[in-house]
Image (cartoon, rainbow, N blue to C red; front, side, top):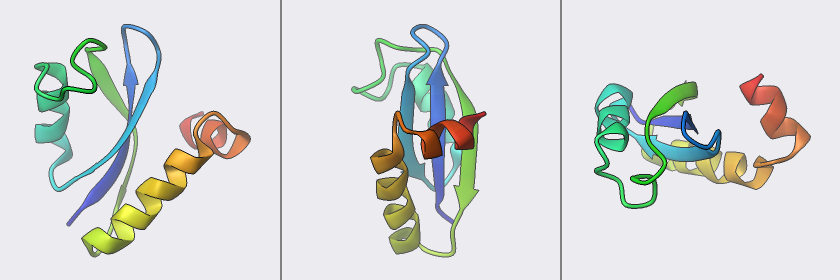
Length: 79
């Protein structure tokens, strides 16, 4: 089952929104510097996740969350 997740950087308090099949392994990869876009912002912690029945639905939700980034809807999810 795919997941959409939000990570918070413990270094700069920034956020990363992504999609994966295994949150634990994906977080590990982010924290080991294995993801190019986040390697300089580690460590991270998962602050939000949702599980979906299929990748297509997860991808739609990922795009939706990215469109919220910085707005009130985004803040309400992470608080």
